[in-house]
Image (cartoon, rainbow, N blue to C red):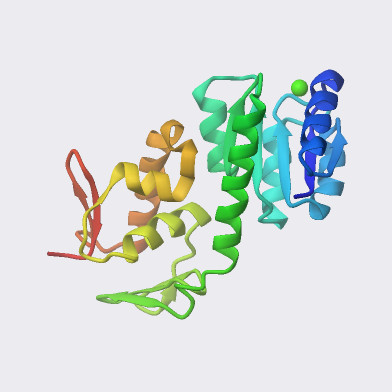
Length: 223
Ligand code: CA
């Protein structure tokens, strides 16, 4: 896969680019956030450092996400949960704390690209529409209508709802939900899930349709 590496530490960037190249991944390396915004369209995956000389990496991420679904893995020296959660909420697909272990990086690159491909070609859900009362969830078109009106869910709100809507009336554990929406990064986003669920419930505006099962998870659809 073509990798765009956004990293201002020349030593780290050089070593990483060389290792990825040796495993068959062509790498374009840039040191500045502004350059990342010019090159991400030619990449299959972006590796994004957060501490950049010109722009905050999270701003770079926000700008890329505004125009592109390209998978992004955040490389962060900041191990603190807040940056990581913000990154994931802004649409990062995964994150790794530096120093990066190559085997782990390669595994996560494969995983996020696999998920991105599955998102782009929802063969099993194309044309599937789940209807619960006056809520219509179009899994293929990624659109949710409540009483005929598009409620404008964010990407994550939709993905959470889609996981639940794939098994209406069935309890889905919190861990399974996080795992399906965030993959391996789920450990960091437990509180972030609550934020997305709050937003989702407010937009659906159908109390009781999305039930919390205490100590376990969630269920879409009434008993
Ligand atoms: Ca840096």
